[in-house]
Image 1: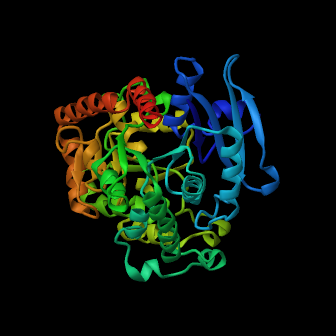
Image 2: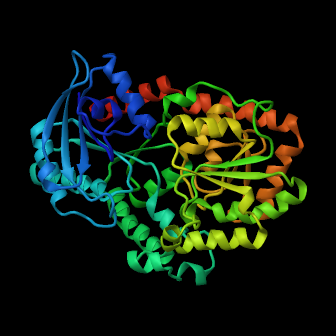
Image 3: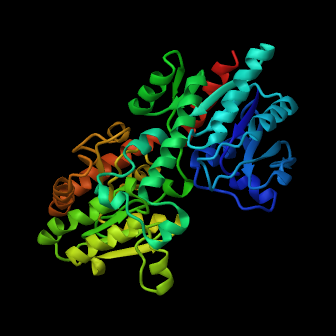
Length: 433
């Protein structure tokens, strides 16, 4: 069968052959491609990915192995402005489909307009010619739900405020939320057009069924980055009373909730520390960084000022996969404080390493963790509940070890690379019957 993948980034295996920069963040893509490269399937693969200018649209045939050639198609889309829908994408997708003639078009994620463009293209082919490839959309984040709770209980006067940076970029918290909601409208239409989706939680199933009650929903878990399938968290080797947060650069991720929980934690554990990966939006140690400070960054600083937390919080900046793994293994507890998630890969990575997890009871997270057995869940925005959950792990080593072992066992099943790959092949086979 012939399958066309529509990806946000080129998989690293392909990018390396093209002397380009690729991505290893999408472990489910790189993992599946590694298996295809072993030749134990009957899939012929092509890949389409966005580029920043129309002049770069082309087809490149890439030899991944001696026997596996992959046509790679580029199309124009400004992924830095994902709220903007590019009208030329549908025409380009039609060219690609007519050139490659896939049996299945597999789109990874609904967060960008190219998903809607491909859905429109396939639907129009079906209506015009009566013949079209099967469209399969893989649900990842649910962007319109993210837009609905983007501000994550940040006070209204903060969400509508502007810093100098926000004025220049016309992009404060309220404006950023509006962009998420705009992208969400593209997502909603794509879901109404999708006859087939893959998902992994009751949350994303309910969303897909809401927009298309007749959609064929295929359950398929995700494979994570291969580095996280080795190594195990050790209570005796970690830095006790430390919290790791994998991202905190916009309100939805809930870093402000973690900061507001710290006074309650410090009352019981004065040596507690927070380590935050990703962009440091709170940086203000130079004139340039002060000028670039966003409203959310200013808000985070106000919380740290109020509770004297600056020496308790370390912003690590962007980390590569090796550095991320090191931070997971070094912390005492991983915290996901998001106001909404479907099935966060960062939490899956923590569980796969056996790190004790505290997370919000929202979206698809309860499908990933049995509360009090494989991790601890708290209500969105409940800072005292978050503090109590973290301290309960630090109070009781036996509890920490029990949560660690159960999380690891659950994640090894959920993210089993062989099982997930075989499931993907089953789905392709079902679609081509």
